[in-house]
Each structure stands twice: as C-alpha cells, then as structure tokens.
Length: 144
Image 1 (tube, rainbow, N blue to C red):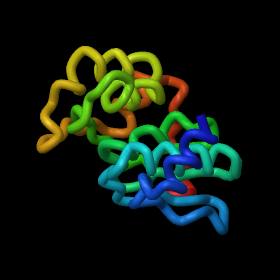
Image 2: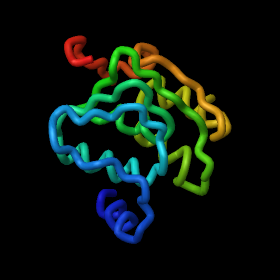
Image 3: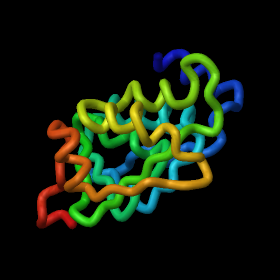
C-alpha cells in the first residue's frame, strides 16, 4: 500500500501532510482530521519510523487511523471524534477508514458512526475508546 500512497502523494493528491518526526515522542495534538489519503501516508511514515506516537487533546475524523499504530497511545483527556466520509466510492471513504479500526471501535463505526454526516461528529473519551479496542493504549501518566 505504501507505494500506492507514495505515488498518489507524488502526483499531488496529499495536500495536508503532517510534519515528519524529528524527536520522540511524536505528538499529534488537536488534530481535526483532513484528507484520508494524507493521513494514510503519514501513518505509513510513522509506522516505518517506529518511535512513540502520543495523541493528545482531540483526534477527529482521519486522525483516528493513527490510534491503531502499534507505537501509539492516547492522552488521558483525549477526545476521539467519528463521522462518515464525505466521499464513498467502492473501497474509498468509510471502508478505507474501517481498515484501520479494530474490535468494538470498528463494529460501532460500521454499525453507527459511519452514518453520521461529515458535518457532524460523535465524540468518545480515550477510556471509552480503549474499552471498545483493548489493544489501544493510554499514555503513561507522567507523559501528559
């Protein structure tokens, strides 16, 4: 998948990329989402980097795909927001988002949250997220 993302980004499809990691932890803070294709490219970059990724404050929409990184954790007070994609064609949009979800999060997204209009958002706490996806992690307290 990374080669497809690299080609798409090289062709100018990724217009809202996050900066590359320079220090650990890499902190994603107050992320409203953005283009899913850009988030996928950034996720691949962070997965290849392998350093700790902390998600803080709020993480909405396309940002949600970072939570399932094996090196990611959620801040204790982080709110996570879901809605349906504004583009849904074949594997693009909601199915694309769902690929990065696990367990109860994926089930709730497919059964309920994907139907929320992209102009609205359904928020849950980091603790609620972890209850639905026990493989997700809360960051250590000393790192808040």
